[in-house]
Image 1 (tube, rainbow, N blue to C red):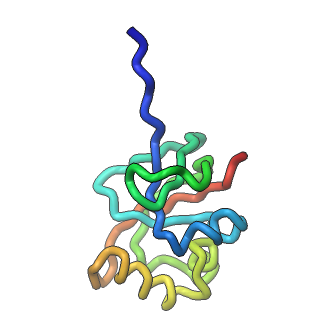
Image 2 (tube, rainbow, N blue to C red):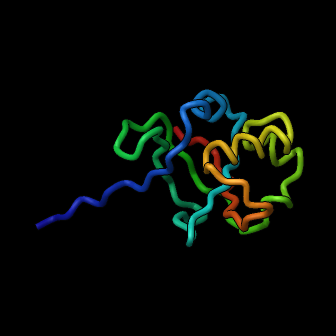
Length: 112
């Protein structure tokens, strides 16, 4: 019997689809308890857990840092104009206002 491996997915907000496909969003921050991705891995991008993939990305780097360590350049890599705009989106997405949570930072590139 051959078992098919379930492709690994990363769930993104619908508002992130266009910036990812255009190559403007190349970084994401997550509150995972443990890292779910590995450098070099290729993951499907979806907007809901069992939805159809809109892209595939290769993981370029993974690290942990406090959310407050984010720069404006990092915010732009996440698809936002600046840190303040990213912070508002982060609070909306995660429904929290923790002062400085520790997050996983994932750099990626779209693969065809």
